Length: 304
Image 1 (cartoon, rainbow, N blue to C red):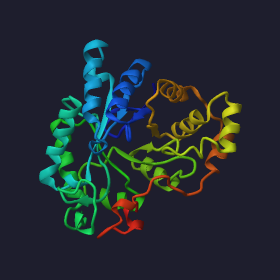
Image 2: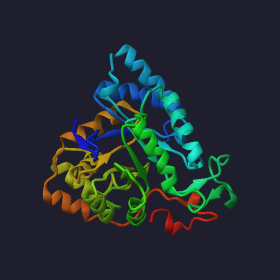
Image 3: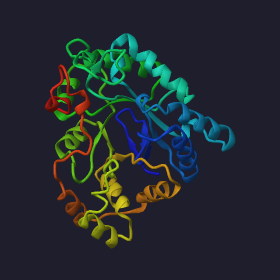
Image 4: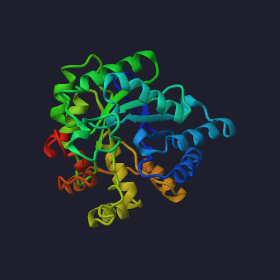
C-alpha cells in the first residue's frame, strides 16, 4: 500500500473502499473481504446508514483475524443536520459507537450546507439553515476540539470548492487535512487540486469510476490505455487519480471488483497516458447537489 502524508504527518492509504449505497449486508461482506485482500482505508459516513454493519465487520476482524486498529484508516463524515456546535460532538460519538471504534482516523464536514436537526434529508426550504445561521467555522471549531482531544486523528472537509476553501482558511485555527470531492478524467478539478496541494490539503477523489455510470469505463481512450498497460479500464481510472497525488475511494462489494481495484496500485501510467486521460475533461459531474438546492442555497454556490 502507498500512503499520502497529511499536513499533520498522519499517513492516509492512497486507495480505499467507498461504502456509499452499500447495504448493511453487502458492506459487512465487502469489509471482511477487503481486509483479507489488503485494504486498509475505509470511507464511511453517518448518512450512509451502514456504519453499524461496518463496525460489526471490523470488530469481527479484530477478534478473528488479529487485525490491529493502527493498521486501518477509517473516515466518517458529519451530516448536515448536526452542524450546530452543540450537535457536532454527539454526532461524532454516535459514529464512533456504531463503528465500534475509540477514534476515527479522519472526520469530515460532509457538505458545506446546514439543515435543521429534525431534517435528515431536506424536503422543503424551511429544512435548510443558512451559513449565516450556522457558520462553517463554528462547526469546525468543535471538529478542532475533537481533534485536540484525540477522538479523531485528522479533520477535513468534503465538497468544498476553491473559493469556499480560501474564505474558510482565513477563519480557522487548524487547516483541513483533506478535501474529499468528486474527481475523475471527465471532471479533473485541476484548479482545486492545485490549490489544495499548494496549501498542504490532501485531496480524496470520490466517484473515481463514475458513481454507477459505466460511461468512463467504456470510453475508447480509457480502453486503449488499459490495453496498452495490460490493465482494466477501472484500474486505469484509479491509477490516473493516484498518479496526480490523490487518494481514491471506489465503491465495490464483490470480491472480483475489490481485487481489480486494489491491483490499480500496480499500474504505472506514462506522461502520454496521463495527458490523454486529462484531455477527456468534460467539466461534468456525475453527482449533483440538487437535493440541497432549495431555500437559501443556490445551485451554483454549493460547490463554490
